[in-house]
Image (cartoon, rainbow, N blue to C red; front, side):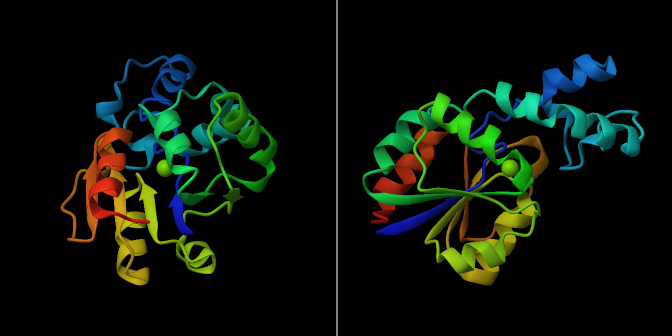
Length: 187
Ligand SMILES: [Mg+2]
């Protein structure tokens, strides 16, 4: 059975998941469009150390409250019969219970959830021998495609709008990802 590697935040969870939490905590009125780099602290006037302290204190609560990305649930249910679904995320291992509960609560299928605590995903994707990767972080997408030679679907977000090589395809929602799989016949 073919294996799919799937990022969690901004890929299975909604692109806009963090924005309201940041607005509330830091008394700002940002939209997701303001986050044009992956480093969220570049979008507004905040001390990165202060942000980091806030993030650690609120991470679990935010993960629990994250909405699902577009039609991820129904598409992943469809894929579950055809593929092995491996979620590979930079979330720390300590958030595993919360993360697993979120998948169960939203009825999103998984074969395994790998929380590697690092944005460097090439080794884990190689170890698992995934055939395709779904991601929203630009440099990860490029790196996974270049190093492993696998196709990558990049979920569009303001922080990843840069030119893509042939092996990386921008998608705007889960129906487009499903359509890519259907037409490329990854099976
Ligand atoms: Mg992500």
